[in-house]
Image 1 (cartoon, rainbow, N blue to C red):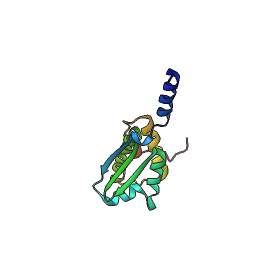
Image 2: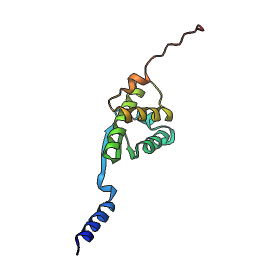
Image 3: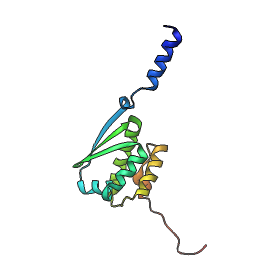
Image 4: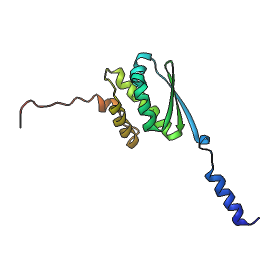
Length: 129
């Protein structure tokens, strides 16, 4: 067997690597099941948006959500869900476009505070300038 054929086999083995080997699973417990339902959305609509944006799989049982996927994606989605839950606790409703916006923010800056962004008061002048 030549060195070239050995290297070719190693490259082929590397390319055929099972992507499930890099699978990470993270779990979050939410204290209020009703707020979790708001987070996941009507008919799990928000959950589906999170799965698509985050390239993860979410499994909700009771008040616990399991996140499976790439380790980086799992951490991002865990941060996203935790922070959006905090926004819901403050009384702000969450919609699918909010999830998209929040995901883009946290993708660029994982230490961003979504509560500060979503709950910021914007004052609008009633007088024309």
